[in-house]
Length: 231
Image (tube, rainbow, N blue to C red; front, top):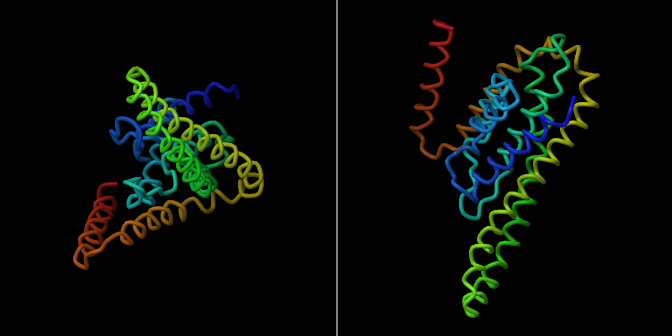
C-alpha cells in the first residue's frame, strides 16, 4: 500500500493533537470524534466508530486539564484506526476483532505521548522570557511568532507521538497477527463483551458519589435491555 493513507492519518493526528490543548479545543481530540474522523478520511468510518467508542469509554475520566498529562488517547485513536484500515488482512479476519487488536497493541504506546507533551511544555516555558525581552526591545512583531512557536511545539509533539504509536503498533501486529489470526474469529464475541465492560469499569472508577453508581448502572442496564429488544 502507498504511503498516502499515512499522510492523511498524520494530518488528522496534527489537527486532533492541536485541538487537545493548544488550539481551538472543540473536542475533535476526543477518541469518539478523532477515530471516526480518521476512518472517514481513510474511507472506512465504521472501523473508526468501533475504535472510537471503545477507547472513549476507557479514557472517559482522563482529560488533559491544567498540569494533568494523561496518556495520549487522541493519538492512540488516530494511530489504531490507521492501522486497522491500512493493515486489514482481508475477510478471513473479522473486522471488529482486528480493530480491537489494533487498539490493544497501540494502547501501551499512548504513554509515550506524555513524554513528548512534557517536552513541548518545557520548550514553551522558555518562550515567555523571550517574549519579555521582545517587549522591552519594543519588537512587538516577534510576539506573534513566539505565540505560533508554542502551537508548533504541541503540533510536533503530536506527530512524534503518532509516529511512535504507528511504528510500535505495526511491529506488534507483524509479530502477533500470524499467531492470532486463526483465533480472532473465535474470540470476537468475547471481545465485543469484554471491551465495553472494561469501559464501564473505567467509568465507574471515576464516580465519587455513592448514589451516582446506581445512576450509571441503571443507565447501562436500560441501554442493554433496549438493544436486546430492538437490536
